[in-house]
Image (cartoon, rainbow, N blue to C red; front, side):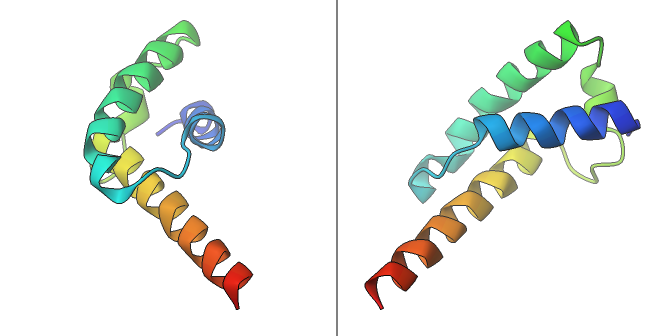
Length: 82
């Protein structure tokens, strides 16, 4: 993946991926992938360039990001209750 694609994806995920309930992650990842590809195209970055070197597809990458955000939120809430 090119440096610009890596930077775009990192920035995009930070801006668009929020903690949501776990059962909704796959559907949300699919929705986010479409939105991400559309936004990337506006920046001259193709879907192929985004997915290059991910080791998985964009949907899987975004689902992992959603899982991570949800895990962080659970930990934050648990710490608040301690």
